[in-house]
Image 1 (spheres, helix red, strand yellow):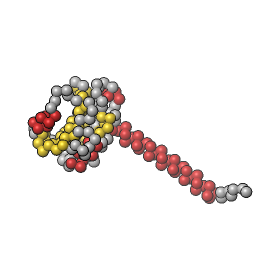
Image 2 (cartoon, helix red, strand yellow):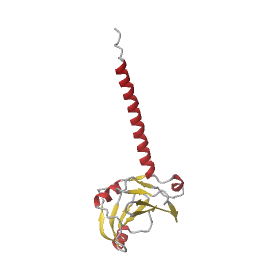
Image 3 (cartoon, rainbow, N blue to C red):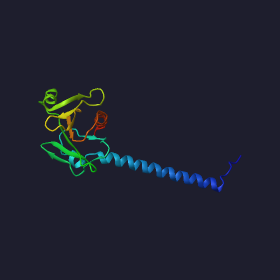
Image 4 (cartoon, rainbow, N blue to C red):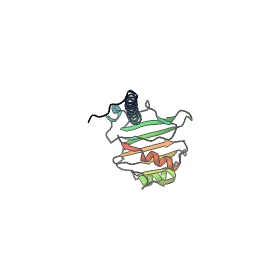
Amino acid sequence: MALPTLRQPQKWIIITGAILLTALLSLSGILVWRHTHSRSIPKSITQQLLFPVYRINYLPPGFTLDRSSFQIKDNVLIFQAINAKTGQNIAITESATPQKIDFPSFYQKSLSNVKNLQGQVPYPTVTGKLNTNQRTTISITPPSAWILMTTEANLDQAEIIRIAKGVHLQ
């Protein structure tokens, strides 16, 4: 028994649908790649560092990574995210975990309104306001690294948790 042949309009619909599906999948792949790549720290920078480097996959609305801001000083990675609309920035440093630091004492001396987000995020994270200028501060200590972020932006706890959850080994 022979299979029925497709009529010309049905064939056209199937071919058009296949082309549109292929285009949609390609576009999705490109968007995912661009999103991941735009959050990555350039390999030319990470190769110079002696500790594991983490990327921040989530930034608050309006903030973008300033790709021209990456610099290294004394084996500390320094960069920023900026909000072009408001002019605010998030200053970010990454370094190897200091061997002789008492984090609880550091937080007590340097921050007010200290909140430990343990259990809500993948890595130990503490947040508060810097005593010197009241900038919101986020300290994240994944294995062998210390990420410190400060900003004048008014971030609520939900935003801070999203930032901390978005930290991944590059």
